[in-house]
Length: 295
Image (cartoon, rainbow, N blue to C red; front, side, top):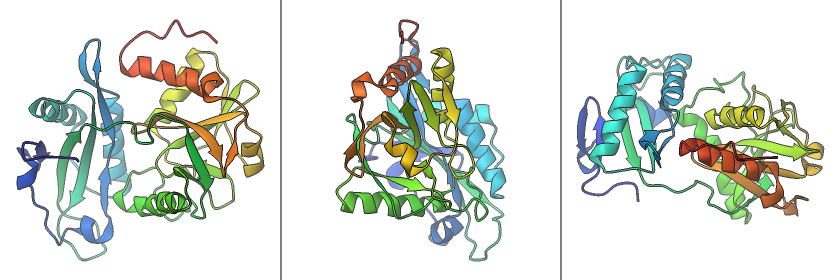
């Protein structure tokens, strides 16, 4: 699904075949989840193949490393150029890109002396598909921000996400919606949430969420389209009174929500502010003007 015998990846300073890549089984990342990663997309735009928000993603990768004391000395421009080479060597246009910083062998609970970099890419559709998704409130909470660096995109943090999504699938839903430790709505396992009410959008504030790059883009689009958007704590009761809602992330792009705990929203997706933003977002990633979008 992710690679074949011809797939080329970047690994520790070299471009090699994915089938020839090896990882030390004593890696600290493998044993303790001590590593950092990113999710990035490239698109076939009107101006050629472009990596969307490449600098922002690699700056976050570097910041995540710094937050959890993983030494990492690549500069952003170098990382971007390596990634374009990965795309060219694999003849990829619309793709999902995965940089991974992982640690050397170390069975102690201390920061590593050496780290390694892998960058790969593959063709991948929208993470949650093209149809509005059915969510359920998860029994798994987002981690306490006093226990981890919540804004760092760390591999081990995603065990929490896997548990929540897996539970939702077993219950017959498409995805989970997680609360924070105080019972407020936080985010889905790998996406941020926006809700619509009375012509405005609301999204949970920073603190218990991973403040996504796509989340920031959505907020910028709202400003450009004069859509009021506010960061605030959202209770389950307020969520239930929302007229519509959507999720967003690099992998999922803009994903409409059909229902939560089998309770549908009042507005049809195509009539919601989320659908309007989805169209504007798609225009942006393809480097097309969205000035024609009128509220």
